Image (tube, rainbow, N blue to C red):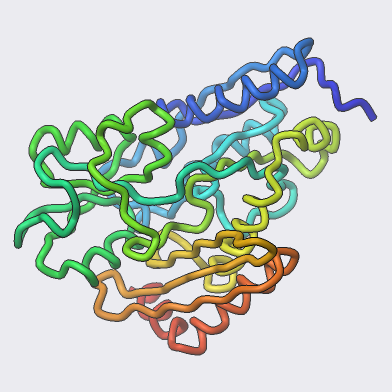
Length: 311
């Protein structure tokens, strides 16, 4: 079977960051297959349209992929490019995660026009974030701060900060770096202070199960080290039913021949935080993720999850 396609259409959200990601993949494919026409199909998803409520209240991150999946199903697109942390854990047939690309910076970034880091914020200062994961860690470590919801694309969020609605906001470092906005980052939060979401900083490419031709064409874009790390991270989220309604984090890295994974589950107010860590052979990434998830479950994560999902 030939892996030199004649034409590929990439489904993407229309936000500036999503377009950067799709154009990044487009350029990689164009370099691999110079004779191939690689085009973008830009779309607005339901997640982009609902900006007055937090994701946990309107159905979660899957809202960012549904319309793109429809384009795959009806043949308007051959592949869809996503921030991997937006891809649902239970991605199943007729879809598949064809490729995970090399991860960029997985950390959270502190963005403020007045302060250098979270520890500098005075009592009552307002911090904006769209993530219960970030919120729970801020509340646990800095209970004197006020955390308020922050929705919208990257430019909208920065605009709200610049208008004085927040003293600081927390964003994914990779998104700012990809759009050439590194200068807005006052500091990056260490992984210890703000454990990232599963898959944060990585790009995932989704296709249909029924397209082995596209799967073969995409394989040169795959990063095996990143794939191992995110496999462990997503195993944690999958086992614990990870969604936007749950403050859950999982982050893995490779140290020599070993994979080290950390994870936590918390209450949004930060009053209860459960942590677990494991390490082992890289080839056992999924098993390591499941081991950490089970440790959290036994420590009481099931009670936290039941409380949150019944609210």
